[in-house]
Image (tube, rainbow over all chains, first blue to last red; front, side, top):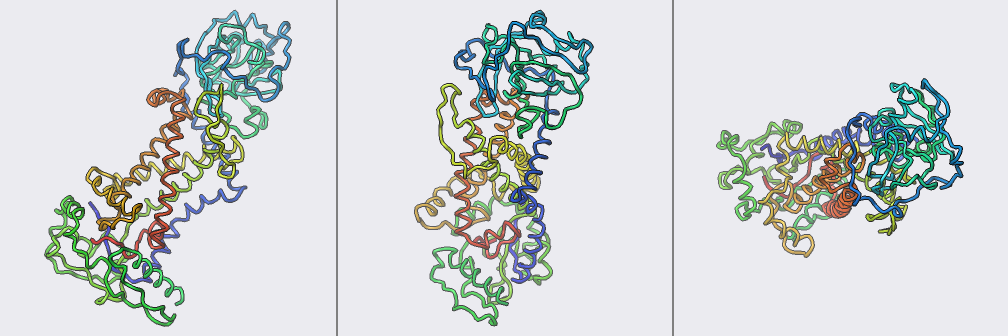
Amino acid sequence: MKQKPIERMDDRELTRLSRRQLLKLAPVAALGVFAFPKASDYLIAQGVRFSDWAAGVLFRPEHLAQTYSNAQVVPFERFPYNGYDELDPGVDLENWTLTVEGDVQCPGEYKLSQIQALPKINQNTLHVCVEGWDVVGAFGGARISDFLTLVGANKSARFLEVDCADDYYESIDMASALHPQSLLCYEMYGQPLDRKHGAPLRFQMPTKLGYKQAKYLDTLRVTSVLQSGKTGYWEDQGYSWFGGL
Amino acid sequence: MTNGNNRNEENRGEESRGGENRSEEKSPPAQSPAEPRRPLAAETGKTENPEKSPALKTAAADAETASHSAIKNEPPEISPASAIKREPAKLSPTSVIKREPPEASPQPPTREEKPDLIRAAYEHPLLIRITHWVNAISLFVMITSGLRIFRAFPSLGPKIPERILIDIPTQLTLGGWLAGALQWHFTFMWFFAGSGAIYIAYQLLSGHYRTVLFTPKDIPGVWPMARHYFLFGPKPPATGQYNPLQKLAYTSTVGLGILSLLTGIVLYKPAQFSWLAFLFGGFHLTRIWHFAAMCGFIAFIPGHLIMVALHGWSNFFSMLSGWKRDPEYQQ
């Protein structure tokens, strides 16, 4: 083992040496940028961008999120209602249609019955909020990928954008949208989605955080370009865009 | 000149604080700025007989002596300070005598023989210093932003019914709101992980870890050291760069860092790292582990800072320059 030597040296020499070593710590001092708002804003914006990039790389399209038994699902009354504003935007459920636009072969209005005609998936998965809480819920719906096939979407487009009846908006990456557990969800706990949970149709993706699970879906758009400042209601205010789990 | 004089006084203050056995030593009266530095009355550590210390014996027995046997019989040779100052690797034999039996040891020169020279040890290699400070800043950011994140759901229980565990004052937090705190957290997690990885890799590859890694043979030394720090017990003799309690603390922080990183990965990507989430007992329990790791750091940091403050400028400066003046231990 190489042990630290004890040396005898000139006092001034040690001080001089120390100063030189101190200069080598300049990179550390550079990290002191967080003292300056402008520099720190830039730094953490880059940090989040890098994290989102890394999250995209880490995402495994075929890897399934954990599913839970019926006994592990929290009771319906303990599944939180969460919205950014109005929990019931008063959607006309009778005449509701999903508008599909963008890079698709068959744009237009789609009825709920058309979505319900697709293979139905029931899954008990974890719903994780960015705040830190988590609940296991029971969800039912059609795969987003099946619906994209139905409308003839270009699956090599990069993003899926949605607008919601409560003026919420979201965008997700195509890889997450095509994940086999990513649902257009119209059922929770075996019942049609109730109004406060986003009736008649919401996203349910166990590979995304809660704020990506847009409710009261109104318009779905397939695109390869995201408009800056319109990537998502919370994302535009500073939350991570990828929001993956 | 004035500056130099101040430093001398600091240095002296350091030694008088160094240990009870030297408490009768008094600093000479304050020097005038023009007066040159005077050697101290007694040489630090000079009077200690290494054989009295069982811990030192163990250390000496444990040490690999093979590489040093060749120079065992060479006469003590004092290199001029200017020749050795920048190259700790090329040492005069004084650097290795600790491995030899005390009677065979060539003694380093005393202050009386070489009044211009002071003892100094190169304790912290550059990479250790850099990673230490990057880590210190990162840890500060991670804890303060983490508290802000925790504030969004200040509970370790279910969402419904939600019981607020602790109301964290916003003054202790960073980021302003949840999204801001997450940005800090998601940025500095890379610095924290990077500096930690470089630190551990360097320690392992250089062999430097042996000065700081807590091993079973350090266990007997923990209690005497704790008794000295907390109950004003006698001070156990210094045997190396770190005492057993320090080794325990520093080794624990590496464990805490690994725990907080692994649990952090699970909280960040529980679906992608579902196997890791499973190991920690699921997302919910992982959040508790992550919080516990932070509590461990919060317990460590004040103690670490108080100890640094008590041990004075020379000790603090060693983590900037690498060099420590007048180390307590003898080698």
